[in-house]
Image (tube, rainbow, N blue to C red; front, top):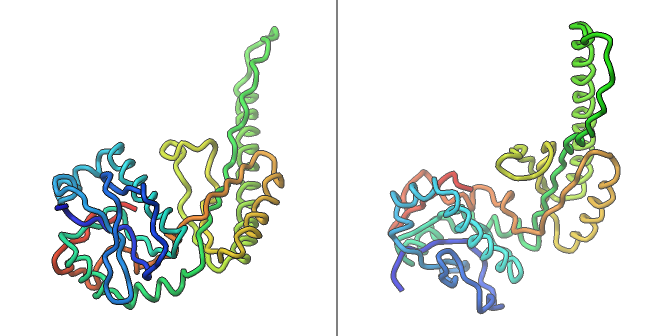
Length: 275
């Protein structure tokens, strides 16, 4: 089959086959491109969609990008069940297998170092949300002797502002304490920028958005640590996701960029900044 090579991840060789029905980006089943002590997991994608100019245009299409991201994640999830993958950036594409092997050779030491660090470990995500205040049922209007004065109105507004500030301070204190506890339990942690509720679709205001690197064997204990906090602070919601491949801890090894910014022989790396 012709087409460009879409690269999902780099791994050490593994013997367990991937699911027979697994498909990747564009519906093409992933396959392995071995080189020395590493393998790249790739699939064929059409040049019409993934050539540089076409890809840049597609990155403005949220539906297309979402479909690609889901297919990419599906392959990474399948890999995580059989080995430790080092995920590459979404949209990493090369002209042919030779370009993929050249990329592996140029970055072999970085890849091996990253895999050594991540071996037997998974990523867990923890988010804390300050729930929106419940809507109050409208009160029956009571006869008022006079309209509210400007002074009373300002007093009420100041009280509402103080209440919101108190809620936010309580949420930040809870999130800080929770992160310190979980970071001490995990081998490593990353704090990500809070999610925009308009884009993420989550209810409430995101106070904590963190990732934790945890040995597989200690994952159950880590989950219990999180579960014990869920009822500690009314009005706050704690969400746990995972286990995932360790995207947040792959570092420069998986950034999809050649050392010194050079284009790899026989191919290119596209989609920079799309993770």
